[in-house]
Image (cartoon, rainbow, N blue to C red):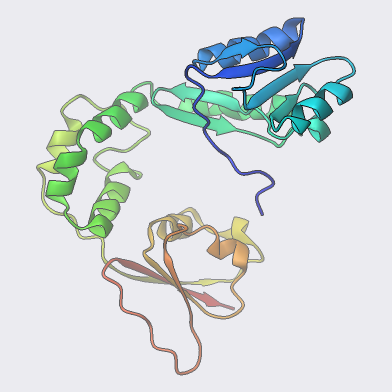
Length: 254
């Protein structure tokens, strides 16, 4: 179960309450301004978020919450309505790594490792795909087919593999290639105890599946690894497998 719901909040031109001074408060000010917002004092009726960097924050937090603001309190996770993740910026791609306030140092360490893995051109790839939306729809009119084609192209070894650098012609070259075939059925037996026992290949299948059919006894946490919009079907005696135009993943339990 998620301990928090990750969201990306647009702050451009918006006021954000900031209470406190010192380096902790200045760090929050820089973060707000980097996102296009501007810091204000308590009482701004347009503000919806607040950062508190005070030695004794309880009274200020109570007042701000009573005004309907969501509050982040420095070094006091129990007084936070939201936490600030460690951010990896490949504009327009943003990766946010959070620990629910447990350890900012751990989130930073994960971000630094990911910095080494993700190419600098990942943002250009994202912008190129955004600009190519019309061409994508023309090339793959069916939404399911379009998603499956993108999954394959962006995956490991694909024409647009996200862990490789690409030139400016890569997207057009991919769109001009032969039509891929990503339909079919794959099946595996899960004998582990939780979702962490999935192999990388099994995890990729689940992430790409249009239909996940499973026997009783398959852990719910494993099924949560599938796309949220993938259809689900529990298999049992006398139950026929539903027809699917895309990729069907069948999970047996042992």
